Amino acid sequence: MSNASNAVLRAAAPLDGEALAAVERQFSAFLGQDIQFDVSVDPSLIGGFVALINGKLYDMSASSQLAQIRQNYTDELLRANKQDRHIQLEELSEFSSSLRDRVRNYAYTSKVDNYGTVTSVMDDVVQVEGLHGSHYGELLAFDGDNFGLALDLRENGAGVVMLSGSTEITTGSFVQGTGHVADICVGEALLGRIIDPIGRPLDGKELRGTNFRPVEYPAPSIVDRSPVNRPLETGLLAVDSMIPIGRGQRELIIGDRQTGKTSIALAAMINQHDDNTFCVYCAIGQKGSTIAQVVDTLERAGAMQRTVVVAAAADDRPSLQYLAPYAGCAIAEEFMYQGKDVLIVYDDLSKHAMAYRSMSLLLRRPSGREAYPGDVFYLHSRLLERAAKLSDEKGGGSITALPIVETMAGDISAYIPTNVISITDGQIYLESELFNAGIRPAVNVGLSVSRVGRAAQHSAMKDVSGSLRLDLAQYRDTAIFAQFGADIDDSTTQLLRRGERLTQLLKQRQDDVMTLAQQVAVLVCFEENLLAEIPPKEITQVRAQLLAYLADHCAGTLHTIDATGKLDKNDREMLIAYTKHFLAARQTEAPAPRED
Image (cartoon, rainbow, N blue to C red; front, side, top):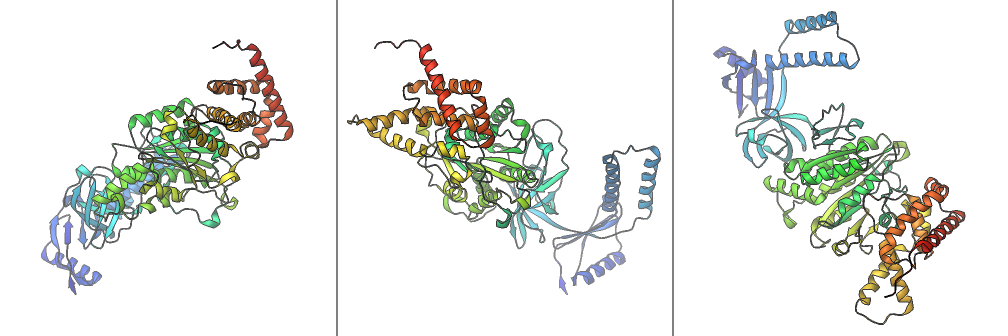
């Protein structure tokens, strides 16, 4: 038999030579190797002993057994209360008698756990020796009720990122495997709440979760999915008409800093009025003030009551920033598998990749392009693939993902942007020049695309937005040449006039969302060239007045379009007629133009 290394025995009382020899013989026969213990005395064990042998913990102590009895007793009391039973004195006496019987009939049983010892601690990353039976992503328990996540498995140990309390961990501390991966509380109890990636409330209110899901979960298989053909309306005219998003789609929002990326995502969340649709907002590495501003925006719009906010702020541990999108996706999946529709926003995956890079470098993983580890593509692909439209057999629910990625100086060919672009079903590209020129949302239609396309558009929107992208792209290209003062023919002048008014027509604030019927009415107005005589600077104001007029005088037609998603010939004629009435009335009330 071979000798065992790291064999330690902690006993409740000193052992004489004969007792120690008997224990060593039993373990030698059980493990098939020669066992010789280093013995120490630990009175807190009450009785029995704890043996640590080659990364395994054999717990035969009385304290552990009594703790389990106490836990079972507490669970019985809690179950009784959950069943709305009032605990009478007689019942309490029965519980106490049962506890006494269990203690009286107590017998030693062996409990075997994986364990390891800490060899180094640096910047929330702990190197552990032992833990031979651990698996990737397992929660590990440290002294003082602290937990870490095993992210780097080796033959003789593991690299662990701490979720809490790394300052309390010292070299030589014991680490124990829990046997399960990180999970988070899910369900409708979270609606309207702000939590961190491990389920702790951040809004100062009590949170009691009863249902839990693992933060990492396999994506739905191909046979469990159905085609993306139902639109998810953002309420933004520029997006719904030219870059439609379907339920179950993954549409990237990409652009430089401060170009309105979060505003588009918030507009989409605000526009979800259906009782069967919920939202999840994942803040990853954002400033605390920015997260508070987002929550305030949602509350003022009345959208917070159907939204869950998962926040890992900029000053949180990289491990929490790493877990945040997976935790948010687990919350969304609970709703999806109940047959509901969910919109989830990841704000943003650039900071998520940076957090993973910092953890990987501290775990001493080999680095690649831009110092990111080799599995950074898998980091986001296994997250975004969980967004799907389920088949009717699986309940028909969906998760629509709007990941956000920040670029530097408009470089969409950088490592992380190209990775995420290749995973998603299209992107909405926001341009700094358009944003600074006051065009908001600053959508560059040339670089923006939806790979689902018009399959996720209502019939009414298809009828009125067919040439919109082409008109806008031609206008922006022609406007560049027109700046040089070249001679312009009549057709080019007409194109510039229409394009100038279309650009103004597409301007929209994030809280000024529009229904399908309102968007269709505006585009019918543009298609029929009814705004040709309106000065461009007045287009936005005229649009608001027109929609208010139609809501008063043409409510039936608007309601029909919203209810059916279709625009028939009669509805189009009604919209055109009432728009002409509005413009004629406005013309007569307008003051006479001044001479130059």
